[in-house]
Length: 307
Image (cartoon, rainbow, N blue to C red; front, side):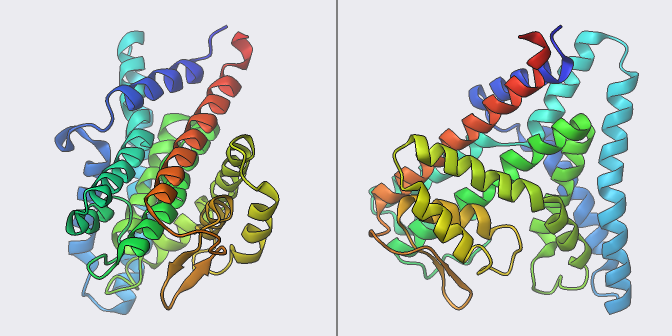
């Protein structure tokens, strides 16, 4: 009666909450990064057409490699205990709630201690924005908005794909999201990373909106103004260039009464309060509770036959 996906997710969630991230040498996401870097060395700088073709090949083949490898390893491990251990190890690598919250807490502590340079340095754990000139309010807004976006990318989306296609599909999603983070943004990777960025947009379409819904439910039970949050989300979700990131970010901004600003690019929400340390703490707590809520919902859904 106890379904295998239910057991795997319970154990993987326990590993995440008790232990956190694996050492780099053992982390599948680091292996994914090595494969992406290898492809980058082959195709980057070879001309626009070659970069587009290479980017399409990378976006297709590297996720397929990790999907097929994990599928074969899990399928052909004969010992049931070894199969569970391997599956839990790989599933945990696909999502990271504790690390996300820990990164925000580190920034929060640095701001509390007036260690601005350390806070700017630690922001790299949440986003790729240049933090060298960000002031205190901008650091709070960048951290809080990145919490919402990463809740979708690092928790909701991998678990969503785990429910659809098991551990292999969760890992394949993580490859695409990692590839988008490494080569998908608009700089000298604009041609090479085009395919990864578009594929990441497609895969995150449902999870991003689902994340906004989970944040809304959590905010409602936390006494936040859910009606205002829905209004702001509907109004502002399209302000960022990303077709997905605006949904959870606008929802969190609306729930907290904050304005998330990225100068020259977008503004989300109305500034009904100052973006201070207490706002970042609330953003962290709300994100953590939303992650736990989605984990609990997914665990109960997968274990429905057991109850």
